[in-house]
Length: 184
Length: 182
Image (tube, rainbow over all chains, first blue to last red; front, side):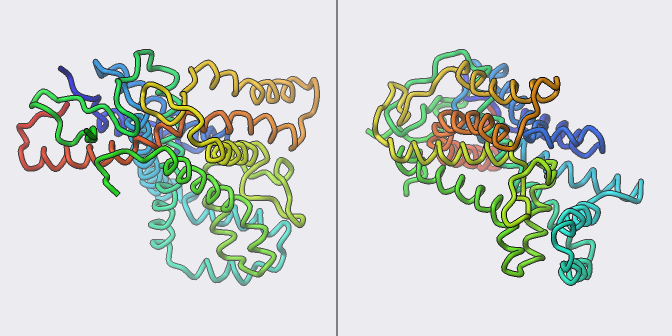
């Protein structure tokens, strides 16, 4: 009997692909349409899991794959943006912060002090902070994408299980000890 | 809490509602933070949402003349999600389906149907038939947000057990690399 679908390959593949897409200047604006690229990463991860498994994909596993792909997308976008910033000498976290300040300054003319304070923080700190924030923000959005993908692509019946538990499917090496226990 | 087991249905609903409330609070916070002089955290919070939304002032709800952290459509979707999750807390225990989830998971058709009002709103606006406003953008998006909750809840219920299971599987593979993957 085949075990549950592998999470890592779909999550890494879709996360890296959509993270790269998010970092490309014009393509990245697609995220402004309801976070479509990040949600897309989760949907693709779920789709790959549905296609790659003989048993039905659970909601929890789809969300986990989506969350991982979102986190990977965040890290990939941060790394790629940094490389693009160094190559093109523009963009990146500092630019993003400047844009946020510009928007704020439209209705907050006396925020210069706050901006100067933020500019005094070293660029490396902003880069790390930006990567962290992107990862944290993209993770739940990716999980939502994973759930949407599960809803759209999984046509097989959900595996049975008692209330409040997950079905434990044995892997090729025997019963999966990692599987959620089914209470007696 | 026994992490081998999934969340109990009520716990999952509360976790979902709290997460949605936190997310919505982060959206509403920047104008309020500016008002009390917390400019730097407000700007950082606004920058945090920048990769997810265009944040155009003309398409956002304003609090005291300042826009929220995301546009009206995103605000509507998040507000709908929050209302939906609060509704699930109120309706906890109303029904249980045969798969063990605390509620019945609808088919994908409902999800597609819930996205239609937003798609229609965008179409009407883009085609120039009628100019959409922030209220219509938020209301149409809130339908999708509220319906999404029905699909996210079973995922939240199962997530702890799946995550712990995956961590244990990795540990097992590290200890015994020939154990196979899936």
